[in-house]
Amino acid sequence: MKGNIALIAHGGAGGINYAHRRSKGLRKAVEEGYEILRQGGSSLDAVEESAVILEDTPVFNAGTGSYLNLSGEVEMDASIMTSEMSFGAVGVIRDIKNPIRVARMVMEKTDHLLLCGDNAIKFARYMGAPYHNPKTREKEFIWRRRKRRMESRYFKRIGAFADHFGTIGVVAIDMNGLISVATSSGGINLRLPGRVGDTPIIGAGTYADRNGGVSTTGHGEEIMRQLLAFRVVTLMSKMPASKAGRKTLAQATKAGCQCGMIGIDRKSRILCLNNTKAMSWCYVKGGRMRTFPAE
Ligand code: ASP
Image (cartoon, rainbow, N blue to C red; front, side, top):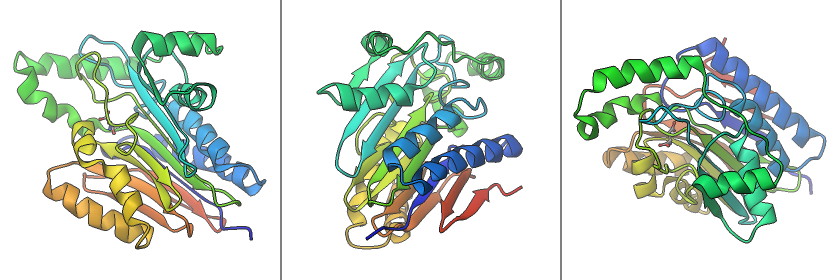
């Protein structure tokens, strides 16, 4: 029997500044992904294509427009997973336009789950991904302004910069019931070079199994401690997506984890929650699109 297709995307839990640009990018990404599902395509293709659009939209903290690390470089993380438990990821990858495509290549073309740093770049080039500079003037300006304010107490103050979560994520279910999740991030503004966040860590930033799929955003170190995506998906075996999300979010909030999450369970029920000041999102279910912030 054909199931109900659905697709949801988020643009990070760090607020909704540049609301119009965010909503426009999210709508475009969701329309593209949903069309793939509508034509009978797989949720894996749908989440990848939606994530590519979001990576190419500089207002988000992923791909072009990623935040800069302490040395002023862009280092990106991305992962992709299906409910059949296939997973692929890249960490601290540079000079690439679409890290999510490289994550899918790790999943499909290697026996590994996660490639990092220079060797992830070598792999991407070997697979045909050309050089691309993802640094934008806008994010360089934010980096300069914040770095000046930081003085020398870096480690005590890094938390103050964590309000800029702008990672992107997409979750979809196709006509055959396959659920897929894609998450892509430029990490936290001014983080130490070499830092890997939650995004490419299975069960933290991304997780899917036959019960559902979840993509998370927020303070990566805390999300890793909570294994946030895994916990929500596991609860989906016993309860609807939104209830599983609410329960897990309550525990995460108690533990001081600033985060947001989107998800879909096996019955195509949607989850979209955050405990930060705001998270932008967009979804289509039953042919009806909803977006936040609405225009
Ligand atoms: N979760 C990301 C990280 O910590 C940041 C974000 O969500 O924007 O790397």
